[in-house]
Structure formats: C-alpha cells, structure tokens
Amino acid sequence: MSGSGEDRLEVSASEIASAMRDPGRVLLIDVRTEEEWRVSRVPGSVHIPLDELGMRAPGLDVGGAERVAVICHHGRRSLHGAVVLREAGIEAVSVAGGIEAWSREVDPSVPRYHRGPGGCRLIL
Image (cartoon, rainbow, N blue to C red; front, top):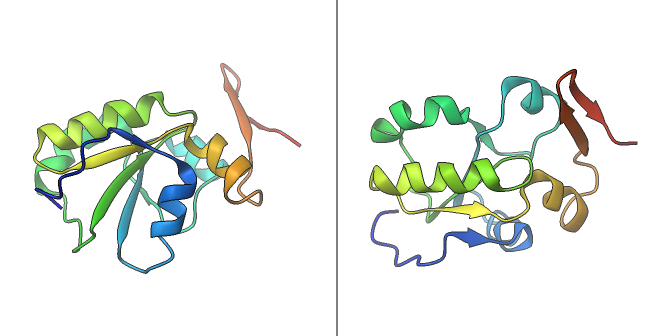
C-alpha cells in the first residue's frame, strides 16, 4: 500500500464501504477497545486496539490490500491510528465519523452505542 499516492487523511464511510465490495481491496482496521468491538463491528474489519497499533504497525501485513482504512467510534482515535500507520510507512486513511457514520450512512444493522464510564450501552 505504500506509495499509493493517497493524500487525504480522512475518507467517508460510504467510500470505504464501496471499495470493500471487492474482497481484499481494503484492509479495515478497527482501533476501538475490546468492549466496543464486542458490542458493534463492521463485518470484515480487523481488530487492533489503538494502544497496540504502534507496536504492531511495523510488522503489519496488509495482505495486498490497495487501501488501509482505520475506524473507531466517531473518528478521532482512527485519525490518530492513521497517522501511526503512516509513520510506520503504511499509507492509511481514517473513516470520518467512525462506526457511528457507518451505521447511519452504510449499514444500519451495525449497532450504534454510547460509551461512558459504565461501559457501552446500545442505542435502540
């Protein structure tokens, strides 16, 4: 994926979803916590918590994917994750609006939730 010419740091959920229609074209990395991952996830995404991403990035195998995209809950942690990957030489983008945007714009079957001191609570 290095050298792909990707200049933007953020892309929309719908843009990544469209690219994911071709198997293997996009590696979607979810950097949320284990609890968030259990509550809601995008099918086909790979879970690497943000606090592990820096140490795992240098050996990360993107498996021939044309794009690497990072997703979190609302898009802030995924921006950080995309920067971490870029610093490791992997051209990555952040999914703007995170899994919240994914649920609203791409796939309403992906559960929405609130994250707070008491944990994750689904939005019904």
